[in-house]
Amino acid sequence: MTQTNTTNRQWVLAERPKGEPTLDTLTLIETAIPVANDKQMLLRTEFLSLDPYMRGRMSDAPSYADPVEIGAVMIGGTVSQVIDSNIDGFVPGDFVLSFNGWQDYAVSDGTGLTNLGKSSTHLSWALGILGMPGFTAWAGLKHIGVPKAGETIVVAAATGPVGATVGQIGKLLGCRVVGIAGGAEKCAYAVDELGFDACIDHKVADFADQLAKVNSNGIDVYFESVGGKVLDAVIPLLNPNARIPLCGLVSQYNATELPEGPDRMNWLMGQILRKKIKLQGFIIFDDFGHLYPDFAAEMTGWVKSGKIKYREEIITGLENAPHAFIGLLNGENFGKRTIHVGQK
Image 1 (cartoon, helix red, strand yellow):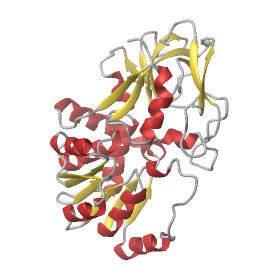
Image 2 (tube, rainbow, N blue to C red; image 1 turned 180 degrees about the horizontal axis):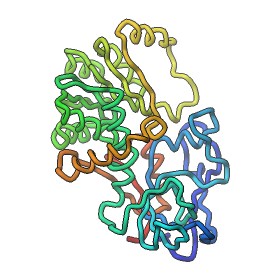
Image 3 (cartoon, one colour; image 1 turned 120 degrees about the vertical axis):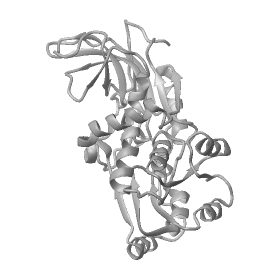
Image 4 (tube, rainbow, N blue to C red; image 1 turned 60 degrees about the vertical axis):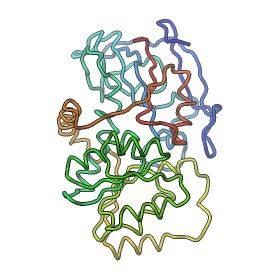
């Protein structure tokens, strides 16, 4: 099922999943390749980003963005190549950072696109370390976490595209960094390859005790993207005036009801009050979009110099996107998960 120049494959939303998405949640259809009209261009998808926020867009519950409509193409960030253009500043052969969604081809008027030029080197990085995940880590840590040298940062999903970047930036800023990840292999990678001071496996029975042991002096910044039992274990360890940048709660995205047990909201609010904790949720381009040029300049320098390492999983074939996405929500990815849709 390779990409062709005669057909546009599209994954469209077939149902609103109750709990975890299944392979029936999306349906693969084939349509004609669209035509670029005046002041439009035709884009061919090269890479498709898979990200946890997509689960929220499958739901019609109130959120910060509109849901994907039933029968509509599933949304997603992409790197695409310009095939035909009637727009100044974009010519055939250019690669662009775009938002084609889960399909081979799309028409665009150029709004919101970034021209990446004609170089095909590390194109997928525009969806990861140099794109939304890297930007989320950089802005959330530096502008909400505001870490000071010598402080302790704890980061959930420590080997994912956001968490791995958070931890490495923390080390560059002179902080002690403790990661939380799922499995011994991921924890070893965080310490041995990324330079974290420690990493705790959240799958072990005594996870909370191990986390407390390696943070005997408390936690100053907790970068949150997971929630659930990880958050429960972190909260009691937070120091006075701790900061929590909150960019996601992936452990809760497939939940259909509140967890069992007593309501702990008042306990959490009491912790926030007594410790004067700063907890701030953010949507990266809504809140920090104006800082993207600053991020791009600094992160590009760090990556080129080897100060920031980046790991990605590239899965070949648009047909494999649903299965890969379900695995992402279950924590199966090791690094940034991206679909190679194109032929290059």
